[in-house]
Image 1 (cartoon, helix red, strand yellow):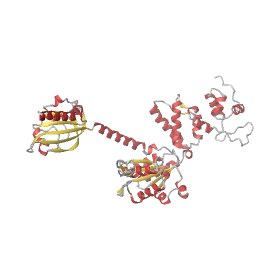
Image 2: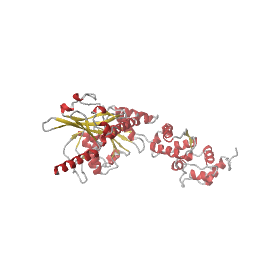
Image 3: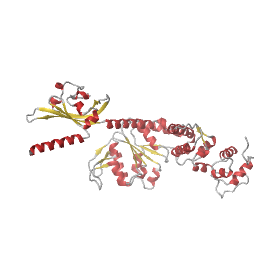
Image 4: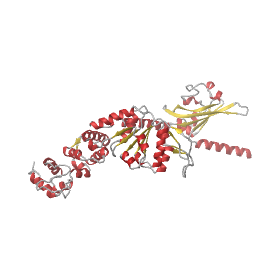
Length: 469
């Protein structure tokens, strides 16, 4: 009686275990008929247990069964002759007719004489994994598109030189040093070099060297073994190893500590790394692109950066010009940003008004292309017309464009001169019109006194009241 109770308990336990599994599990008897079918199999295949019971696995139409297309005759099923099958990815056909990617595994059940009395098979649903793979492939495709030459905009002479440098760098495996102010597009250039090289099907790994402390950056770059330091509960592959075969982009390289400089120098010389806490050397095949917004040679002269590392990094230097030195590219950039934001927001903004465009051309753009893009995006939030106007632009850009001369500079009576640009009659009329002829508002917008605005109006014989149209 006790044995019967134990057997009943064992059966219940096994059944509960099978029903709670996320993987599909089913069993075939010695005749190849389905004798067991858990809930996960119902979810994965669409067949209820009562529908599958007594059928062969032929109903699932597995795409791979011992190199044969399933269904096969029961007598031909390799599992009964091989006894087991290695896990393999394949496709089964859902009850509703669509493909389900799965990982399939099977093993034979034998009696005490070694005869096969049944088969147990497991099925893992790979739908989410397949979708993730598709998303990764799509992201990689889009990333490649983002970093095409066409997305680096410029027709100026200095940008044509940059394009030539990118093409030359893409055709080689030399270490690249990109130098340029913040916002000039260093990461975009690094990506263009990678995705136009013969490493384009391998990873592009980006590391911002200024975002991490020395110890964290060391672990991030080189990886670590389990127990290498407090909190290292498992081993970790570093970014250098992740980039194997591809490119690693080290942004803000000027920020790394002397200790990391020494370790990076070894990577450049030997093309090998050691994980933190490990003495084993690991060979890596990577292309290194470094970038900085600082004058790295000046840091070398001051003793903040190793001279030998500097020359290892600048095998092929690329210098990106600031936007103020290629203002002829501003119209192209503005057009591109407006087009992108129209698609993103659903607006139909055509261009920038003449007065607003003058401000864009006169501004010195300390934040470079990134600041220009942000300014256009700011304007999109405010603009309700088909043209971006002066007061759609960020206030700091407007004020800097109309900044008055310092107070210690003598003022010529009746001729108020502006340091950054000369206020013309046409611009003042446009400003008055946009401010509904409110002189105080115009004065506030251009950072001048109301009296100065009045003097200009008197000088240019502009009516103090809005003309009647």
